Image (cartoon, rainbow over all chains, first blue to last red; front, side):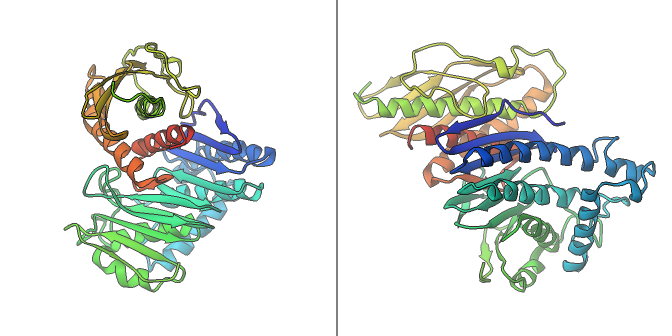
Length: 253
Length: 165
């Protein structure tokens, strides 16, 4: 349901906007925004609603739903669908199959679309001349410029922060875990929740499409995620284990 | 009232306001079929005059002001006005010590339907805890929180920014 909120709140050169769509909440925080960046913010918010119309599996009339139902041919899909299809295939390949858009048989790109949409929306506003941009889509964050301080929720102590990520530049922070809405990530090999599950896994890298996919895949891997995440270039990860212990990878972000 | 200054009070009011706004955001997420009170967008609270010129916060839902009580030891509690949401009345209480928020509690949350109880029981306690963490760590945003408290933190931060905090 795309419900446009009352609009954008301006305080000097700072703009904030909250958009309810894709079953979640998107928060924009833009610093140093001129007229062009303000227009880009409106366009980015509208675009998120468009993405919901195209990709929602909750809407029978979305392209993805009609594709699954067999009432729409691939040749009739819009360029965004083709782009996401390609990204899903790449994600599945790059994660050795640990990320899969083939959930429950049909094509369901839900696990990738939100991060991708946030990354694109943030880039739109940043490229329109804003000094700094932060977009948070239901707990997954993409920033440009800065400085920004991004708290990471402690999955075992409600309300507390497990760590804080300081960002100044293009950076994404995605967190996966059962704390959000119950366990909705399954091991694609078994169709069951992961063995040795982490309490949460946070991945930090440049773009949110990758951060989100890697957090999801790493969460599905459970205890095996650490070595894999260490091997990813330009990526850092932070995990809270079920017993409350934490670890982080040393990779250079 | 032991504090002669305006600023802490302003902060209290803004925080209270942000909490109410957060609850509104939270409760506005899902369509709801039982007959509610006023629509969230039309919610407005009346009460003690707010000293702050920037008495709106968050993405355009709700407005609040507070009434306070203090002790000589510097602990103060402020209760926000009851704000009517589409799900029913919401009211919060903020406790401060030396100008810092030490607790936020929900005084009144909707209890009318099973769905409302689900929302109240799950989300409100988390929401109030988030406020404390967010304020103490001076963060801009939160990764990993549920989407409901995420919206809340954003609203709180918005109010704190306006107050210069």
